[in-house]
Picture (cartoon, rainbow, N blue to C red):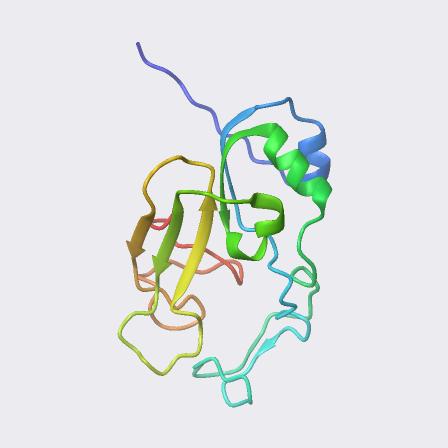
Length: 162
């Protein structure tokens, strides 16, 4: 028996969208919420500043506040209501809302260049009762290791990692 899947794309605020959705509407939600680090406040990633990130040139993405705060308790309540399982990138920033898990995904992204200043790993919390998962996939999204994939957002995750 062939089972057909459909993909719906919503271009709206996630809170508005989730409030319109049924309980357990999705088998899996993969999310990458703001970590509350406020790194986009001035919109510039500089190549030669105190906070050098190893860029070859300055990049101006425009000042934003999308990463100023972490999601509210209401966000987490809605996320768990509309999805049966979850993968939450940056889960280490939201432990008060997520709790314990057996299955963290650890993505080692550093590559061979020892000079860049990004974290060499990212963690994703999962709702799965499985062994932890380790992914070794070099990716310096703003820089030069991107395997030909064009980055479209500052927190873009490469397709093979997803």
